[in-house]
Image (tube, rainbow, N blue to C red; front, top):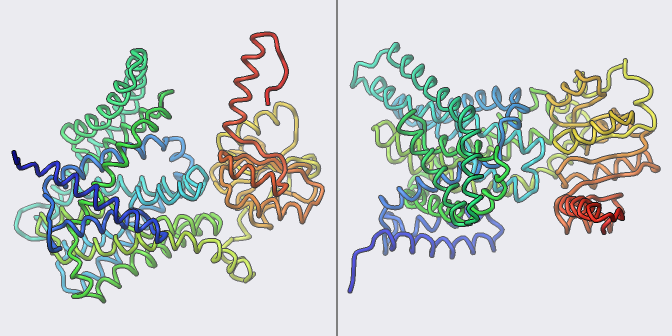
Length: 566
């Protein structure tokens, strides 16, 4: 018996075509997201043949957005955002303004209305958190200073877009002159929106941090794995839904904060691991549904328009972000990483474009241009990340340019003249003052071992100096930074940062300046640990191995055996 089952048909077609095109994209060394978007184009209404149900796909995409942002919240803490607030907050706001002006100016030249131009510019200004996270995770830099700055920057952008989505409907009446919306009404709407968001955030931080960890513990005590997974998913979806209807907050932001409060629980790692397959599945459907909205004929009809949009996203935004990061006196490595992270657009751009079309502000052509820009910029994003090291090497070879971008006059880039002599000879140079670095620093302080901290995060360096700890800011893969830390007379180099990309360069520079120096490195990758050992990179500590050793030693002590377990 045949039944009309558009839901199953849409899901089957979405997953099937996404698998095929995602596999092809991966084989071509492109992000799998490109394949998912192309799968949506194939089953969308603008391509001949089978057409999936766009309305059902859009609802599945909403669930995808919620679970995606829930995953972001599970991996990000307020402490991380607070550590990078001085660069992420003003940087994101200024970058949004610059990119919006570029996009709106271009749309104005095309003769679009003020409302349409502004909507178009805003859609080009915000990058995809999903694309960024996958790019940073693939390169092992998500937990580094650069990764935290990039993610913090994107979170600020997402919060800004929530305000935009709430304010756009009343603004649309003012732009179209179809209503009587006054400036006072707009400001009142803004105040109410900010108050609602603040109330929601306060509720999540004060109550959510206590309620959800307790709830997870109660469910865990039942011993049911499926109930635990169901509890996590129910928390994400119900919080997102409740936040939207009670506080006017977007599904995405509600789910993000749900992830953040669950992160405070001791079961956060389990929650992230067990919900990952479901999050990935709905993420695929989200990008497929976005591809269904794309009219590929826009590339043939308006190639120059598409090219200009891509240039704004990939070049304009990148240069603006890099300039802002350098202006905040962060090193070139950080500026390039953040700029490459922002050189694409994604989920919020799609949501904003859809709202703009629905309100009559943005022409259909604008939505197609935004989707074309997203598809092309996401495709190019991995190439930009691959170009980071060659660009840095090229800049370093040109001393005048290197001095200009690295800001040698930065007071935090060199040790104060008042630094005690004991920190300048036979000291430990500690690279990274994150969670691991702080514990190492605390132990050395307690034991009276002199050390100098090197970290790219200026706020952390300032905190060290306030505590009386000698510290310099900069990229430890830069010879000038290690020289400022007096690596020439150091006895030990401890690399406590999880960033393994530049470890070899740090070790090489330190060895050239100080051939007698010993090195200690941390890693969470067994393959990387073995390679580092084969390259005589010093003592290599593998995170999981050390955890297992510590737990085993505790067990052995309980039975009266003190020997070290291998």
